[in-house]
Length: 252
Image (cartoon, rainbow, N blue to C red; front, top):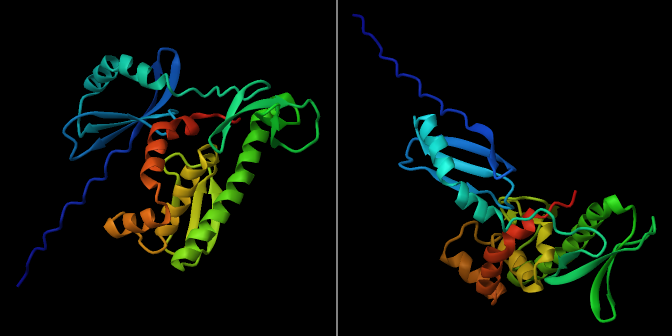
């Protein structure tokens, strides 16, 4: 007796995302277009920092409809992108946020010397040495160092409160999230958070440390996070309003 075994058709791999460059009033923006089986409409969003665009479209949508959608939303994009300025004035006389306070940048003209935050005539100043064209990089290096100092201290304090061990703490420049916590106890933070007010830096540390106990965003997690950082809601609100501007600054 013979029988024929029916073979299941192989599942089709999803189409790879299309990438292109979109001209928004002379501003060239990387655009990723992804087809989604369950999408019923076109969605367009600006990536954190305002440096790229991401578009989700229904599967099989004609290219002309995608192009028409982009044409119709040029004005919307122009308005939204206007708040993302990559020119933060990272030069002598410019301004940069440090722990929530605007500091005037003072290029010392000396090739050697530390970058340091000082008060001059009661005004916050960030003194930067080195070559003028490297001011942005030296500021970034200073912010990374200060961010590590703040976040190691705060994370260690909060971890001690809930008696949870930390395996490692690292600084990164992520655009999609401000921090992360692995199941092994490795914490990672965006060093750009050091431009935010101290209460916001504290919230970020508390948020990731809370994940050492609760690897989710359920009610128990938020209750623990609020216990570690009573000002959680205000800090979250600040990040929602200003976080993208911090991501948008180009230190190179």
